[in-house]
Each structure stands twice: as structure tokens, then as C-alpha cells.
Image (cartoon, rainbow, N blue to C red):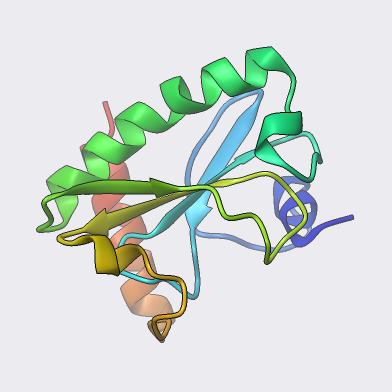
Length: 130
């Protein structure tokens, strides 16, 4: 069982942004940028392109209002989208506020944010959701 499955089952706490029957979105606690969100299918599949077709098609539909809320919450040129999937063997999408392509470089140092700041980021994004 992956760490994401444990979050989905409520065994590990997370800074949840949104959830439906198929997906959950929560803050990355070691973000590249403030507002970095992970969108995770609730089925445990290693690679994004191994997801059933209905999950693939609904992934972006689920992520769209979250990305808009992130863009409205943080000064950025756009929300970058990455599917790396090497760190956790559970398909997931990274949504990251960016100003330049370098902001998506996973070799950059991760931010170290306090719980209060993560909570404030979570609340800011949720407040902008439809």
C-alpha cells in the first residue's frame, strides 16, 4: 500500500483541497513552489497511462477548478502540470504555480513550510474553489 493510499483511506493526515469518488487532491508537504498540489486517483495504479480510460479523461476535469483556484491564490504566470511518478508508485499529477519552466525542475530544493503556512495555503485555495 502506497503513502497515497494511506492518505486516501485517512490513515495519514493531509492538507486536502478537493475530493470526489475517483480522485483526491492535497498539498505536497515538500513543495517546489507554494501551492503545489497533488491530484491522485483513488485506485492504486503505478503509472498514469495504466489508469483506466475513464480515470484518464476525468483527471483533468477534476484538476481544472483546482488549477484555477491555485492561479487565483498565488502570483504566477500559470499552473504547471507534471506527471513524474518516480517518488511514489501511485499515479498522480503535480499542479504547481510557475513563472518559468525552471520552477518545474524537481532537482530544485523543496520548500520547508510550517504547518500554519500549509494550512493558510490550503484555506486560500479552497476559498477560491467554485
